[in-house]
Amino acid sequence: MGTEERTVAVTTTCPWIGYDDQEAATIARFVAKSSPSQAQEVADYERAHLGREVVIAAAERRTAKWDACQH
Image (cartoon, rainbow, N blue to C red; front, top):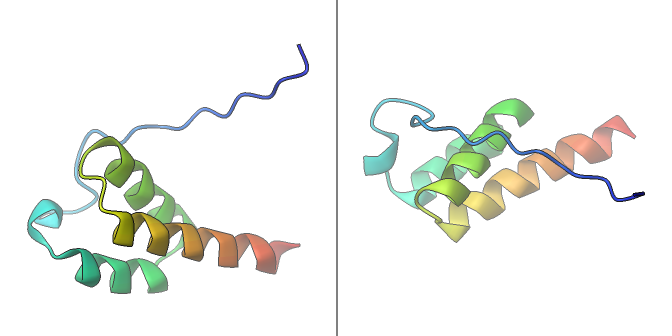
């Protein structure tokens, strides 16, 4: 009791066609300008499938930046 659980939806399909073939730096640049929901989708997919830290970090920065603007 008292412990909050966070459920993360795991995206089973690529965020967009050709995603898996794109370089991490290219995706990171896209994520920096994407919506927070797109950034979260990319981060969830990366964690579940490819694990590219550059992409995950970029997505986390984008969602953190959005969260900071909302407070």
